[in-house]
Length: 133
Image (tube, rainbow, N blue to C red; front, top):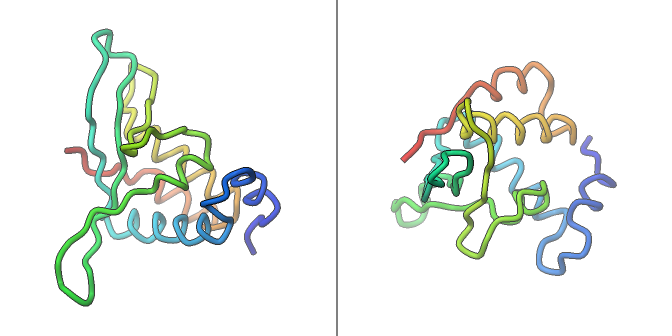
């Protein structure tokens, strides 16, 4: 099924985030990107335009109250090596391309490598650019 040993290496050293948490968040990310519920909040862009700080959120409807919540993927992004800050912002560097697309593309490819999705699903989902606000 999943590459459990790889996941355990990724979350090793974090006492508050386990491999089970990563699996839960990865499934949640895949489901949200399939349904078009991932939102990217670009907090700032550097003067040079080479780096930007952004946060990926899931728009989730609470089944008990009916209200909408915005959930982050802080632990998952940390395990994937993005090193988010306390407020959930990750610093992405690069220019000449859509960095929101690029980040989602990389996350989807990593989740495919970890066997959360098939290659056919990967090819479709990596093209699903999150909505930018």
